[in-house]
Length: 279
Image (cartoon, rainbow, N blue to C red; front, top):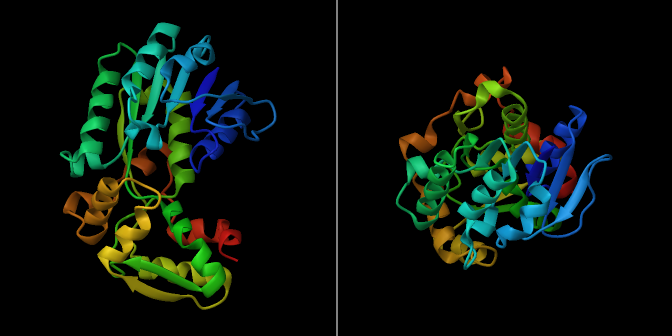
């Protein structure tokens, strides 16, 4: 049995589906009750309380660990989840980390994630670490303004990074959960090309079949908007990357190709599959 945390998100949903289609027993974990694929068991649990996972991990052979905002919650103990997995007899953990632990290792959120990576390495479990950069699905921040005004409002319109389709992250995670050859792997996950917000807006317009205007925000305006849904410190970290990516953040990684035997999908593919969100 494989346990998938964050099972209702942009990565967890396709990962759960892929594992179920591969014929594996899957337990999908999320904070709230949610629909899951046929044959998949759902468990509601709060990752800020690792002890709540103990019954879920009983009998599991593998765990996909996606912490998202839980990592930054007051009193969170993500390393305790790794300890719970080891105590329950889980054999392998696939951890969703972040490229930032390499490219900007001294930010508080990156220090915390690096500590979790280290705890996993020292746990005695088999492990795989996935380090994605920016997500294509972050474009959903623009969905309401595109629907209502046909406008994408973003900072740094002509500065790009090689964002990745979350479905490709899910596909890599599935391979790492199912195939013993990936044990001990650390994979940096990016899309196939550097793409700017302005070009993303053009791809959304092409998917919609109607013009979409690009409006460039100042950094101050962008931070004010982002701070409504994330800590201000994390907003600043994100804007630092978006505004002035370093060479490591501009690098297109070969790791999706290495794991899946195919290139990562471009942003235009993600926009076409998710066009309903922008209509």
